[in-house]
Amino acid sequence: MYNRSPVSAYRVADGVTGSIMGRTLGYLTLLLFILGASALISPVAGRAGMWVGIGSALIGTILVSRNVARAGRAFFWGAVVAIGMGLLVGPFVWSVAITQSSLLLSTLGILLIAVLFSAALVSWLPWDFSKMAPLLFVGLIMLVVTGFLSWIVPGMTGLATSRVFNLIGTVIFTGYLIVDFSLMRMRGRSVPAQGMAVVLAVSILIDIVNLFLFILGLGRR
Image (cartoon, rainbow, N blue to C red):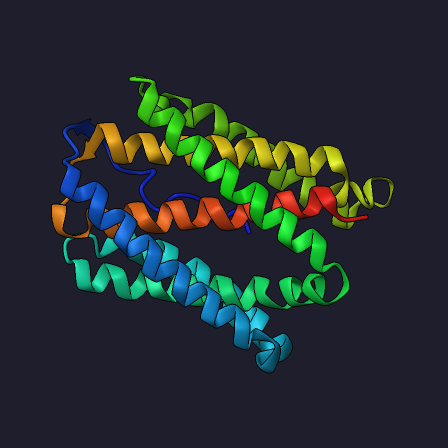
């Protein structure tokens, strides 16, 4: 997946209120529900659904931040992202559910622990974890390049499915999750407040989906 935060281009300033946090979590819940529904019907869409999912996720990620001035429009594009990601990862999740159901359940359990740990860490420590973002971005670029090379360089075949690759991806997106929770808790963005919660929710959604895929990759043989 690797679609990263639609908020990364914005300058930040102090002052996210509790209401912003509440709305962000509310939007995130809705987007997760939409993604789950899309994943459920993804086998019906077939291969065409995969390409639709890629296009929807990429376009939606770009346009959600460009419509941040209005929460309604931002949420529409956030829903497009959720639908696209559901169509994209749904067939893979279905395949694992049929062949390795125990792995899917354990992955969901580990994912829940990772999300709760990230939220607890941010709530307990009064640090600005968003300063980790540049380092995480460098790691993400290296991850993307390595994954791409593994498809076109014969000697690197299989590297993108290795345990080391998936472990690094898990660490990177756990870090991104901590960064986005930190942004939600401690800092506000110099953007119109109406759609700020939606943009944050989409960013966290992307973190969760990518983290899920890398954790799942760690357990596959």
